[in-house]
Amino acid sequence: MRIGTVSSGTIRQALNGPGLVIDLGAMVIRIRSTMPGLTEPLQRVYRHFPFVSDPEAFVDVDARLTRSPGLLRRMRPSLRFLADGLDPFGALPAEMDLAQLEWGINWCFATMTNRHLMLHAGTVEIGGSGLLLIGVPGAGKSTLSAALALRGARLLSDEFGVVRVADRALLPLPKPVALKNESIEVIGDWSPDAIIGPTYRKTHKGDVAHLAVPRDAVDARRSPVQPRAIVFPRWEADAETRIEPVGLTEAFSLIAFNSFNFDVLGPDAFDAVRDLVESCRCVRLRYSRLAEAVPALNHLVA
Amino acid sequence: MEVDRGHDRAGVPLRHWRLSTRGIPLRLDGDPRVVVFPDGVIVFDPVDWSYRTLAPDGLELLGLLREHIVSEGADRERLFGVVLEAVAEADGLRVDELDSGARAQLVQWVELALHVYG
Image (tube, rainbow over all chains, first blue to last red; front, side, top):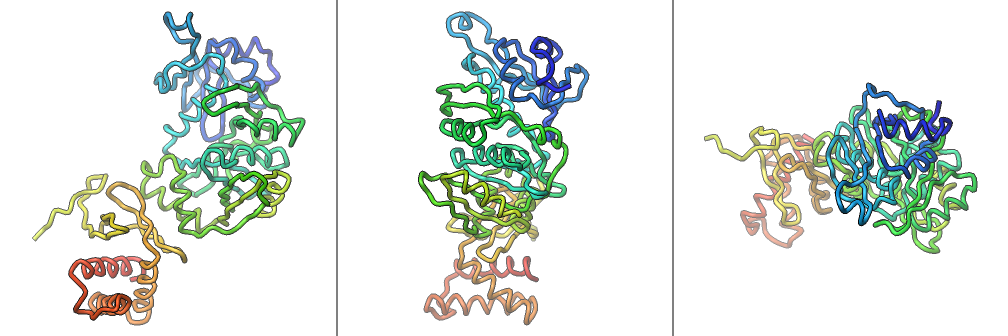
């Protein structure tokens, strides 16, 4: 049974009780929530994941989304995201339940997963080759990851390049793709069949909506892939699509800079980044149109 | 005499030497991680677990030292003489005009080259 095929009452019961256990490949998370508005959007964007609600299941993180207690709750409803009992964010707007949950889970990945090198990167698999899209927020990682995934690539993650230190393989961590602002409409137009959750307006990152994880990405979430290309994308209005090589020293610096835990893994991270640079094609991509950028990226790893 | 040169993050005493990269002292132990790319050199700092990118002229210096190590072997004194001459010539100076600071830096470049290519 998959999350999308069970009744919403069953999902709500799981969230209110023993929790919904979601195996995201590189991490397993248990989600519990008393927020009534979370059930439907969560069921929509996690629809292809197996439905598991086992209180004994081993998980890496126990996440809870709860209403804030006290007087404030009546005056201005808010929620709290708790990870293994920690409250990293304090009171959050209650109406943004799924968006807050997703940011909270990202925080867990970024701070709690130190057995792997964690890069701020979109990652996909194209024809057996791993492709990393590395860049600062706004560079187009999520949009390109979503666009590629909706044209036959396998989504590994729109946010995390999880590099296994032992063999430099890319581990999938397929979560709903966080689309922001204009990207929501762009991806909706790119693939009218795309399943997108509700749009949360005026968040600290602007408008945000989540693309459901495609079924093939869910089914292959335990299948790592060797990285073959590293792309540093940059969206520029009206830019012609251009791919140009990046010097290896610059590539090393950009990868290390976009790592969440370089200074935690130290020498292991240094060696892993060096190997990535030496084994992958490293390029810069400037683009404005997905219809040009996506074939160019497919060609890059072909 | 044993000199205390500090410890790395794991508490292991360092046999470090210092290399100034754009004015930032970089402390390395006797077995630093170094990666030499065609367009630059990156060195891992075992003290704060950061990395440093060395200036392009350092790459030229490493290239020169590599040439000599490959063709003539890893003789510290001779390699030091080679870089002294090269740097003096590049700066339009006589070898004896290079000050102690510059000489100390060049000693570290020789050590780095020996580590990478020796």
